[in-house]
Image (cartoon, rainbow, N blue to C red; front, side):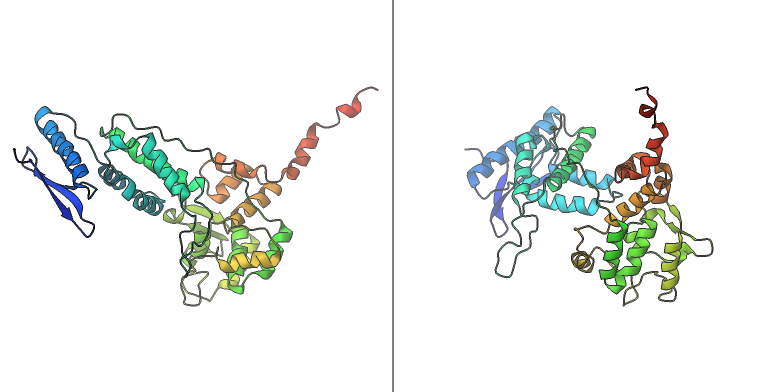
Length: 357
């Protein structure tokens, strides 16, 4: 019996079998078979070796692994703001796709990983007794974000010529989002129950509409009290464009009260550094004490925008004040309170009253 052109040897504590052989071009190939079953590993190794021969001798296009596509995609997406979240999803996907070729990631494989992710609890922490922290399953939105990432990587592989036809990745349509905002009565009630250190940041967020981190990490070097303006540098802005913002009287009063507390940071903590989060336990506990339905710190931005719309600020002006890049981004606020349109609606009234009996 002729000797096999490759060797299979166990590796690691689990004894996973790895194949080793010399490719026709002289390159040493060493790869995991992904199993401890020698029969399955032998079957896979034979196909794997034969594929390398066809590529080298017959000119066939080489099959690419998922891990190769991920590496290439990451190299081109280092600028992505949500890259840390993408890497978290890629770590989760690794045991499922690590040993798959791109053409093996079909609708069945996608369904399997979606079902597996959906079956996991939303919060994976464990109590001291080992029981799950919560039975609430992972949301469909989280599953869809993972699938969208897979779709992006497979489309990128297709553009590189590594995948002939990428599979269809279907995402469930997200539900219509209703934006939470506070009435001025609710805002006053919440302010009264907030911890003392959160109050200045809370008032400044309501006065400017700035996002959480833009408030927490505001520096005096980006504020001009004499001109009543401030700036958000491009790197800190969501749209990656610098924002120049006029400061109203409420914002100026907050800033004046913060003067002298720190040389660099406008809202320093007790150690002289910016706060990590404002949307924290103290903020949420204050909502309970104020009898206000749950909201996030970002809902203060929605509140600021809705107050502007109700006061008659045009959507175009609101777009500039809030640093949005398109008018579509602010259209979501137009429906928050239609009462401010009453005077405009009245412009065409009176027709029915003037009709003859």
